[in-house]
Length: 138
Length: 382
Ligand SMILES: [Zn+2]
Image (cartoon, rainbow over all chains, first blue to last red; front, side, top):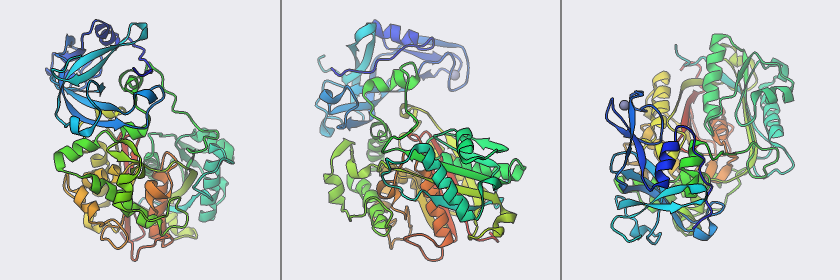
């Protein structure tokens, strides 16, 4: 497991990180225009409505695009090569994450690959949402 | 209100060197470039009343040079900031906020002497939602769109590598370029993998250097020693501050908007462009620019580069100084793209093209975060 720079929640993002510690992928949806969005904000980035709600996303998504990092970030050297991906959640929004549970090689990572969320427990009670190929064993 | 032909570049210069300079601090690189550009314009610092820069504060640049300005712009949105500065300077001159605008760039990107930091807090959005995943600067973030472009348009690794090869051919012709040895597509594909699909030779250099521009109202432009380079069209926009928020990973919205604004203001067609500078932080950025600015259709940039149409002898001379890939890249390279546009329009370039009447300089800020486009001409009747 890499030594990651850990997030510090702000008032707007606390609900997400608290959900994550319970292994729930909490994202927001606008009641005005109906769109789900990411990242957390107390208003809709599409229509500016403040009538927004939190919900637990399915945790399913697809590999939208990615890189396989060979020149690692500090703390990640022993983990390289590793995958930084844009995951397209089933509900629509895009989220950055790592794809784990599969050899980090292009032939195993076709764009469009079905993914599901998995959690990596950190210090300070933080759990980080990562993604693995759908149906693979944790 | 249009900025078309409102202002002109009458002074342009880079630092004495654009390679590795551990003996100079970042603010000194700003000042060296500024003094060189003022000398080029036949002016003194006392002629300057507008100061624009990025990276360092314009207040510090003014103090360091001994200037008391009446117009200050510290727009700092990454490597395209200087395209925005040209646009803002033209607007300020037109509005009477200043008469002589000095735009400076200096960056100790390689040696990090007196350099500004990238310090990110873990409470920022990037600190919460990107940095925990092991992003290591631009090579792991800027490059994320590439595989999506390949997936949707069949763009190949060889086509991506061709951008670096074509750009190096220009650098071979420029004695100031840092990397001048000829390379092949195979050399690029066999160079070290940085972040798949990007190899070392598809990444820009990291250097120290600077550049500066002096702009005045178009009607004053002929009062100075060098051939004036007029501002014909300008554009700017921004899209996101985290790459994960890019709307469509196969195209830059900010590029498209900045380009459309610049062409609309210039009132010319794509075919009227004689010379182009597209910021090349990585091999794919000029591909995205070629498409977003409307020179080819969406997804068509790969074959265009593979055919070497942008290389010496091609019909679309691009990044003729050798680009960020082979000439220099201090961190915010946009100033050097503008400098080469000015040189080509003055007839002073190392790899001078014949009969250049128009040049486009298109910059990216951050990682597809922002964009600025400037179209210049040397034709006072344009
Ligand atoms: Zn809404």
